[in-house]
Length: 391
Image (cartoon, rainbow, N blue to C red; front, side):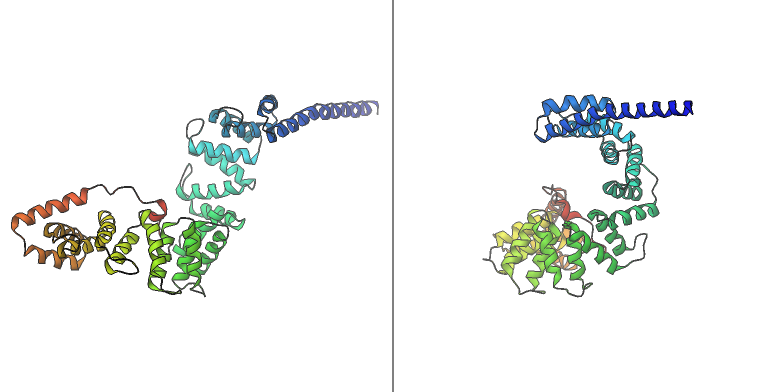
């Protein structure tokens, strides 16, 4: 009984001592947090550094965040990575995610995809939503881990079910294309809707595309979702909405609105939009006719290799719609369009050849080769180059 009583007294003393020693650390951390909220980093950083060195996990995370963002100190990715990893080792999910992200990007040290995957997976198993989405992506693309479509689908479904918009969009793409799942367009539309409601731009475009193809009960909704994505600068959505206004589908035909939308997409490098602008200038559709405008926009699309624009440009030159008939320029553009399978361009090229001397034909072919090699200017924006929605 005496030994038992002594043990209990010793345990009580140790607990009391532990609580008393933890209290100053807690108070210091709270003081540092309040200083950060006041942007008084001069006092916050020494406190956080001392606590972090003592192993205080929340202080380590907070200090790493200051170094990462350059708040109150010079930005230092190496120190940010050090303290995120220190907190990650103690099981802090956000620190595990941040460490993995820095390892994936090579911030503060060498890039290490295998180690990044390890920390993403640890955070994902603790329920970290962004980490779950990253694990799905890395399994799908074989980044830092062997490609595993089954595991990718498992984590993608988990993140999508918890409301992660990019994961919802990718799951919609899976169902649309039938990748690792049975093709199900209704399921694709469902996941596109959930992502679009959170403001995911590409999902909004794909949802508009689905309604445009008649996959929903109300095809007129295509215009609504295209407009949401177009307002956010999505190039394909701008072109698709312009085409709806140009053709008068689900809305009264409006050439002026179509022109504005085509112009916005064309300025981002969308070749079909550039072609449509040229067509509108040439055909006098809601605009003051100007063949110079047609030549400009056809020319941009033609230099990007778009055969219909090359053929229209050939006609403008051959018929003298810009300045005077230019047989060699017309032949060159028809030659390029014909090489891309444009049948009418072949007939026009052969017709022009009958009006030209062998020397002119030789020079026209050299011009075609030069036009083919000519730099195409600024590259299109990413939203113009995105793959289709799989619908």
